[in-house]
Image (cartoon, rainbow, N blue to C red; front, top):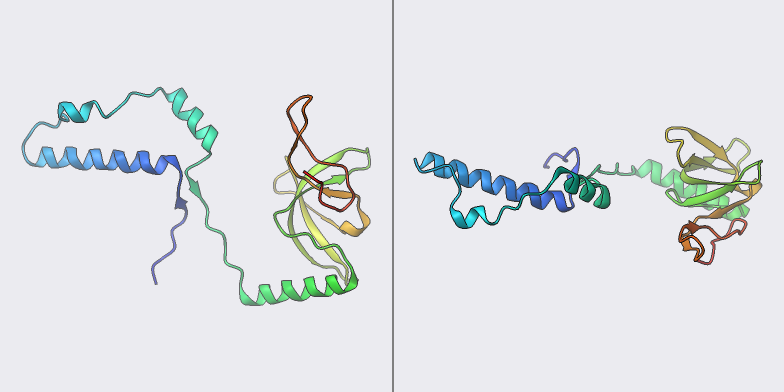
Length: 176
């Protein structure tokens, strides 16, 4: 079995890197053949000069050109998750999938954007969700969503300012 790579390369940077490696390979071949290390005139026109600001803007726009591999869920963990989900479903508890973006109503009356990071069964048998609030990475909080006022965060453009907002519903998908 082949070893799994530490990260999978993808995106626009992969093609740029492959083209660079190809140019370097051709340069080394010319050098080994005793010829000039300068590219031929037709090759030189294929290369375009780009400022660092343009490159950084492109990376910022498209994101990084690598993605970390996701850990495979083991059979024991999968069976436990399915058992907890089925028990919660039979008891009528709220089940929200991991990775779902939600907003939770805080004590100040503000909606706090968050992501569901996990869920498990509490000591009293109720389902609790692990929540990571946006902007507070690394800090997890546990919520029983049946006891909270929350909503799924869906992108809905508002015509006034062009920003995205979530519809105010309680524990249901917003209609966006």
